[in-house]
Length: 304
Image 1: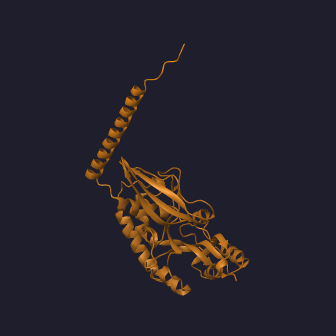
Image 2: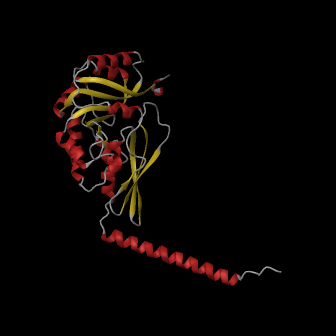
Image 3: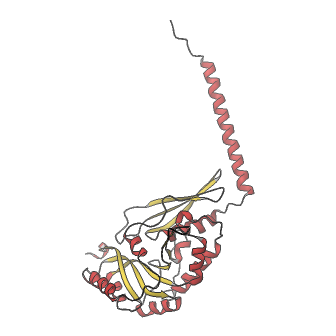
């Protein structure tokens, strides 16, 4: 019994119908998409300002200087940050972190759920006004003294008491610290209490460049008085937030950020690629409780 030959004309007509329906659906979805974005206010710039900055705050273990919108499609839009782990050694390549917001304002950022690794541990140890601990300070001295002082380091400087901007400016002047991209301010330590909602919140780590993408060399930091400018910029950013903003993907909270901005004190510093010799000097200041090293490396550019 011979197999029946397919009706190629029928197959062709069916294929044309499928393609026509697919094209019609595509055009219909595109039209709905345009109508939605026409009548509903989706602010791409606000997404970058709010959620891009929130991602940088929640992930101080990463340098995330580059951000860009991926365009928008039906019922959602996305924003991608590009950067690298914050290490003392040279970069080993960039990674991308995508933030997605749907039509209802829910944000998904699975790659940005908080810092990890030794820098996160160092930030996690920062407490609210822990006081002077000579044993801890001496341990930090011994650790740093046992290493070559020319090493570059990523570290956390913890203060014995929270610092107002006035005291921090005076601290900067004593130690000739010039604020910039390599100094970030811990405005609130991390938090965990399984009886509360949310149960955990990330530390609020702020650098004035966090609100900008593709930081240019003409961003002027104010050297010793940078803490004043940094706090003003942090308060301005918090003023952009609404209670309805979905910050849960970053383990941040509207009230948590508002409180940190209102209080305006600093509990410690995250310093990026400082020399160990400069960190060692800070340990002689009674305002400094300890210095916790997260990563060290030789600056190969100085060799030879």
